[in-house]
Length: 417
Ligand code: SDX
Image (cartoon, rainbow, N blue to C red; front, side, top):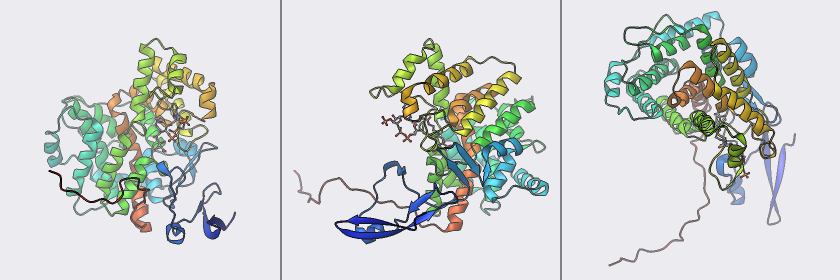
């Protein structure tokens, strides 16, 4: 560990202190006085080399394919915890005991209803809207409903699945979602999605378990684009609901959470066009071709994404237990094998990420493609809220980066005409 680094500019030596995280691969140079001392700023488009905060919520080792939630490896969390227990852990920092989780679940159920006013507003939303646009709009509305701001985190954990189901049902001209006070969180979600007017949906435990695990896999992931968006709004003291609404919109992008929908559309295209893997892999490698292998590559994982491996196993088990054959899953596995044997993908360290297999599970559950990113958002909710809570508790400064201006020099308006 080195406690200082020297930077020489025009033969002048500047000394900067360093910061280390829990693991030594998280190490940083404290540049908070860089401009003041040297007149220079850092230039780092995409913030690929920039730490914007200190956080204790999740940790990724991209070289070893490690993901920890509050110190617990994702492989253990997925095996030993429910999504509700994982949400408690991510939000509070420790695993709940039976009393904690019982109280947590009871408090969430207190808010487990669809507000009449939101329902009447939702009736005006055009059916053509993408469910992510519907969800982010409705979440923004919550600012006017939970005025007392009581239990805002549990309130949002209760309301988001209801509003996600409402977004799904609006698109299908279905009756509003009916919540079920007796069911477990994820079972209630499936009932709200798939129950019909006079027939309550009875999700089987195989599907409840598979979806619960997928929600866990998405629960948090350090400073990804949407989480950093939520933190940025938190730093300006925007309320929790509007900050999460912004996070939903950031996640919607196809380079980020929108990729899970793109993956299935890509696989269906490949299948429809005859399944010629070589042709599509060459397209993905061709710089002149905008086509990218969706669900491949990651900013941090330069080895496998542990979540993708777990999602692949969930998909294989689900398909087997439901006794369905899924040509898309077979194609995905062949495409992964083909890509990982290709030097382009090996050299650029491009591996399947979480989005490569998650859509296959959603599809097998009966969730339509345009709802895949909504499911991602439901999983990421505890992470977004924990980061919003952390930045407010840390009282971080408002996020306001600098820039390198390359526009016109100062000039005067000469009145034309
Ligand atoms: C998520 O940050 C997170 O943690 C995100 C996430 C989370 O849980 O929140 O993990 C969820 O968003 C996963 C990623 C989902 N997106 C996709 O699957 C879209 C396809 N992937 C790419 O768009 C890309 O890999 C990114 C956006 C995921 C990462 O982009 P980076 O880190 O900015 O890397 P890059 O674009 O600079 O790529 C490096 C090289 C480039 O080639 P060169 O310019 O060096 O020659 O790899 C190439 C890229 O062209 N490359 C790909 C590729 N991804 C990168 N080539 C073909 N297919 C791909 N998928």
